[in-house]
Every structure is written in C-alpha cells, then in structure tokens.
Amino acid sequence: MKIVRVDTEVDDITYGGVEPEGIRLYRGSPFVAWEPTETVVAWEQARLLSPVIPTKVVGVGKNYADHAAELVSEVPTTPIIFLKPPTTVVGPLQPVRYPEDSNEVHHEAELAVVIGKVTKDIAPDAVDGHILGYTAANDVTARDLQRADGQWTRAKGFDTFCPLGPAIDTEVDPGEGLSIVARVNGEVRQSGSTGDMVFGVGELVSFISRVMTLLPGDVILTGTPAGVGPVRPGDRMEVEIEGLGVLVNPVVGR
Ligand code: ZN
Image (cartoon, rainbow, N blue to C red):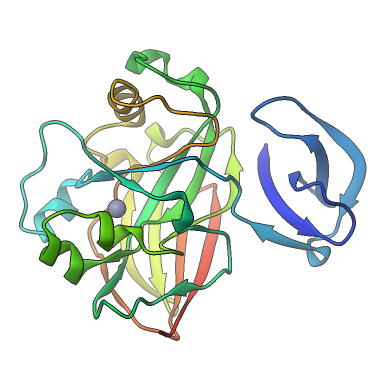
C-alpha cells in the first residue's frame, strides 16, 4: 500500500492510505496499531505532510560510484554515515529555505528507507521485516560549507534540508533497480538506478543498527547518484523514483 500523512479539514487524523477514490483516513499509526475509518477524502481536501516524523535521519555518503567519482573521492569500503536532525524534514510542496550562510546549495535525489520497528544489531538478511517501506528524499546540501567544515553537520543540517514523500510504499523492492531522477525546473539533472548502490539496503540497515538503535519511523537516506548540482531561490526541485511518485519542493529565498 501507499501510506501518506495528511492535513485535512475533515478530521485531526493524519495517517491515510491511498485508494482509487482518494485517501482513506486511518486511526492510529502504522508503527503501532491502526485501523481504517469509513472516511475517504478527495486529494483536493488534503494537504500532504512528510509521510513520517523520524526521531533521526541517517544519511549515507558516496554510496554510488559515479557520484563518488564526481566528488573526486574514493568509493568507501565501509558505509560512511552522518546524521541530519529531524528538524530538516519537510513534506511535499513545502519550501526549502536557502540559508544566509551558503552560496552553493545542491539537490541530492535519494531513496529513503522508513524503519518499521525497533532495530538493533540486525543481520543484513533479517532487515526486510524491520522496514515499513520506501519513499523519495532530497538530501539538500550546502556544498560550500561541506568543503569548508571538513564534516557535514552544518552543510546538511539546515531546517528544511530533508524533503520526504509523497508516500511510503510498502511493496517496492529497490534491489530490483528502480530509476531515480532529479529535475530542476523540469530539466533532468540526475538519472540513476537504485540497483547501482555500493552498499544495498540490507547491508546499510544492518551496519547502522550495529551503531545506533533505529526506532520506528526513523529514516535512512541511501546516497545519491551522479549529477548533483546547484539550485537557486525560485527553482523547483523534483525527485522521482520509479513506483514511488514525484517529490516536488520549491526553493525559497533568504
Ligand atoms: Zn546524500
């Protein structure tokens, strides 16, 4: 199924499931217990929110060989992980704010894993049962600050720097190689396949779970293919992943 979070005028319930007629509202949450209600709202009645509120977003650096090459960097032999604070998360159509302190903000189209249950010290082949599903993400990065700081907390940590959505798909299999595309103002900037990740989803979730306990709703960004590049205020960024829909976010000025 496709799971969304919505702000509607109908109810204060926020989780929903996508159906042919619209969005069916659910009581509870997919991470604990939930059940469908009788209420189906039309898309026009609903504003999509980030499909999940994570306690942390774990990023993975240089997980596509072609992107490592464009950064003039080696492909890592173990995953390189970093954190984005949960305050970076925004939903579909919500603006990404260009920070005062940067002059080089880049888009990074990424597949995001949404963790479904408490996950600690798990083996790669046992990861599947711990994943709720997948959504699209944009790991927005201030590239100039990433270079200047020598570590990535500031460059990747600005408020609004982690658009997620539009929905969590519980059925797709990224191991099959889903196309992943970034467009800016309609022009294709990145075009890759999730099949080209250096470390697959099983290895990544296992590796991270040996460092930190992953909680329900936590998000793992699995790295970006080649073609990252700058955006400016007024631009419209799109991340499209096969089977997951299109995540659209405008960039707004400082
Ligand atoms: Zn990234």
